Length: 162
Image 1: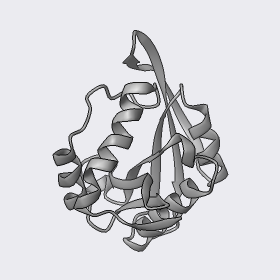
Image 2: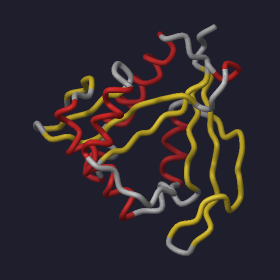
Image 3: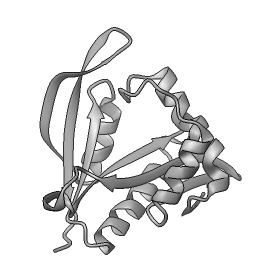
Image 4: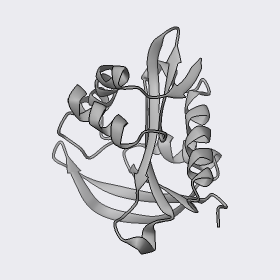
């Protein structure tokens, strides 16, 4: 397993992984797939806060974070996105990626990391709990996908940065 900073050359593989989740699951409320160009622009915009995991030279997951909400009052709070291939789950890749993201956010002075998780993804809730995230809210039926109403579970972790 290799964890490293994402590069523009990873864009197509990241898009493929992300789009599989968009198409095949209720783990995200997003229904619009992302192009390799979209991902390349995101990698550029989030240079230094976008990491990938490789297994045997193949992209197996990624994590990144960005602003939680606009405005200076939220500047110390970030929200992350993490996606792993099905084969990579349960092998420590997610923990490794999240450790990179949490350490990176804290090093930049961020105080809180937020996870916004679909109620259709209880495995993600359990994963975040193991990392020290606490459930702080649930917004009933705010997402809709495949003719189903879905709750949004909000979790957060205090990173300890001032």
